[in-house]
Image 1: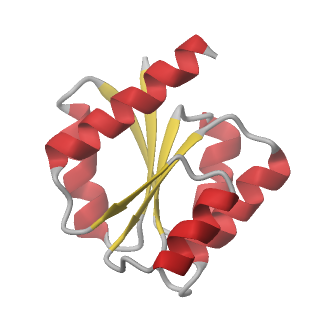
Image 2 (image 1 turned 45 degrees about the vertical axis):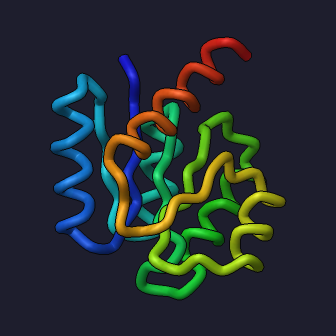
Length: 124
């Protein structure tokens, strides 16, 4: 089963994306804080994580990305943000983010990205 972690401090976004991906036969886990994300990453072992760059703290998503790299987790990372800043895109890419998507989200594009990341995992 395909497992997806959605990390966003906005409950409306978490709920909307959860429903969307559950409807497409994904197992979905959500986290509202970086602490919840750490726990979910360790316990649930998702294939892909959607990380909001800016949550309660302006760099929470990047801090989670740092942690994932330190832990050497195999999860594929898609950064999601309302801000398209070249420095943040470069930083997250250097930390191992596999993609960077700006809001408002195209659900079709997001689903394609998630599916591609899972397919890549299956062939590694």
